[in-house]
Image (cartoon, rainbow, N blue to C red; front, side, top):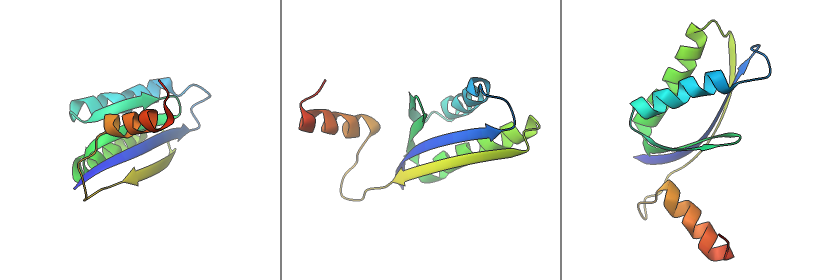
Length: 101
């Protein structure tokens, strides 16, 4: 099953800058060859359900391996069976309906 996930991973107890840790997760997503869009407050990921959730698990494990004792993660997800929809499709649909660019 295909899924689109909005993912926000927040390591706790590492200070105020999280970019070092987020870049580790982005590398995991790239290695898994999943389509993604980096956003200011999270990352959108598109792909097979099992593959996406395996990468999320790898992100958590990699950060815990760095001795981060606690991670808070928010996940929003959507699936569709009526049509095949990509991240770009969702964005362009909003742009078209709102006449924005």
